[in-house]
Image (cartoon, rainbow, N blue to C red; front, side):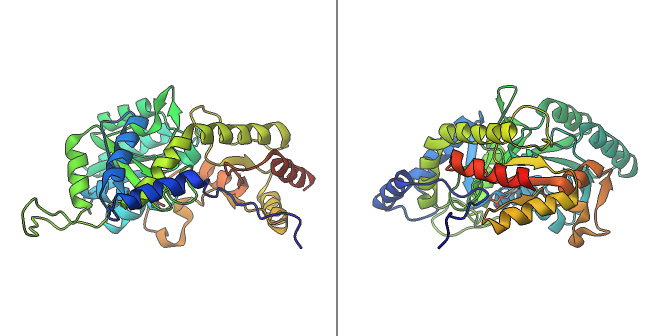
Length: 367
Ligand SMILES: *Cc1c(COP(=O)(O)O)cnc(C)c1O
């Protein structure tokens, strides 16, 4: 018999509250991708992110895809993104044939704005006609400096989209991370800080962006008695049942944020490991620490796995991914590579107990 339950990286944090909300949605008879819970979820997401509009969708990836559609990302578009991210950030732009320009991160975990500026300057000199889109990522819930990036976007006449999929609830200098740019993307996937099991959203202050995204997420159907279409759309709307789950999760967000901050603080106090990121503004989605070397990082992950504890290396940079070999442009990348080689994401679930945290720290400190 095992003496401990398996510890996951960031499992869903749900209880009877979620079940009750789902039951209520059931009772409302809106077992569909529309209904009162979707509407309420959108209102509360807009409020949380200090945006005028929110569009609830079936995933964060769907949100990104709809924004690529909105900004007509195609072969004549150059998309700038940090190399240190999850593939969903750039997948849609890549599929649409855009030129993908990857940029190193700095020690805030965000795209390095000095390197980004060099990339913009170089690409503008080479590419006089192309549309520019800047996609930033709030890595592990760490909000980017929206003012610095916003100034660059303005100077180079670029669309600015914030991939805040990992950063629900994060703020930078008191402002919601998802307030950055022309629009921001949220994700409620199973392991994100709050979950609808699968889901996402676009938040924006532009009525046009919100309305077009909502329409495209429902097959671009015109308001006619019959099914009339002036363009081809998508089926990306969030289910009303899942929105109900999201509402119960939003009720818990404050306590989840406090809990995750405590977890990070515990690791900080007890681990003999360096921390990679130094800027403020985070939701502590995952606690990330640096081993002295790649070998040591691998050893830590292995020993924890032997103890039934799930961890993960930091995202493998996109410029190192086999699928993008010779297909993307990279500006620098050494910091992203180092973070990948030495970084480890530790269990950060909102239900972790102090006893479990102690066990994790003891195991790591013994490696
Ligand atoms: C999770 C995530 C996404 C995609 O969200 P899904 O809801 O899983 O489609 C996009 N970007 C980043 C950085 C993410 O971590």
